[in-house]
Image (cartoon, rainbow, N blue to C red):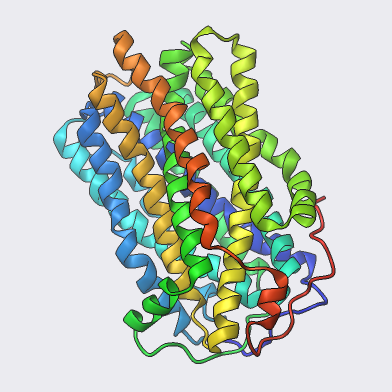
Length: 464
């Protein structure tokens, strides 16, 4: 790893902000499209029963719980002229693009063999993603020592993430439709998202060239010891558990978009794209607002406020069957505003937890922290569709192998409604109770140990 020190009070160049943020094209695409389209692809195109389809979505992602911390430890110990993290961004990202397209290639047509193929392809894709995502999320703690600069860096990242989610999530269903739906449409969509991942991979790799990488520091001698230190970090543990539970709620929303549009709004063709645009589009507008809210309230209080905004709007959406369509879309937009704040503050608090550990121990192990974080996040986002699929199964949802959803009973439609509204509201809203163990402030970080004092003076600047 390069020995260049992390930037401190002077701030990072805009080129680094933008270059780092481009990696969110990768994380946004892979974090969104499988959760949005994979479950409907299995139930309504390949003819897999909802309960089994849920398992096929969840089990490959459960592998991340094991592989992500390993990816973090490996990148922590890597020494190259490109730094510890950037080689994995390039190799992992390009492999991810190829494997993602393979998920929807459907070489066996539909049926049980096709479902098994999807599970294996998804497992390999999740492994490639781990070796991209873990080093990527570890970088901010090493790019700068500044408390507020990390918030600025995350604001850029989340702004691009919102754009990536909007483009991949809103356009991907439209690409499926343009390709004739069914297997052919999903193959075309896989190629489209794969190309988006390639653009993000090359952007972050070249955009962070020459950026500060932090000093090489001693790490714990074994993975077991590193995991013990990470789980013993009380603020990190509280934030991680809360975020994983919230990710389950986000995952149920993503999994339910196509079902909600078709069964509740009776608009299966354009409804998913409109719903997704309403969910993510406002995030591009409210980022500067959340940045100012964070500067005024602090990251923790702003995180709680954003989570509660999400939960309240999702609960109100349970009245969707009797509401005008415009009101439904407005409520989804409010949910999106809460989601934007929830993401930006959680991801700004994570580097603080890593810096706190480094200050106390003097050891460099950002990769292990981010390995645990990304393992929990990806598992939560996968468990969400699994929970949603279980609800569909319990409420009697009927699968189809025609590429078009089968006619459903009133009970099945009720399951779709509850899975899309009440479940995510409870997961995101109640999870904030788990943050009682989080107590990091700029003052506590500055007093934690021998690292440089954090930058407490400047508030986070909004993204232009």
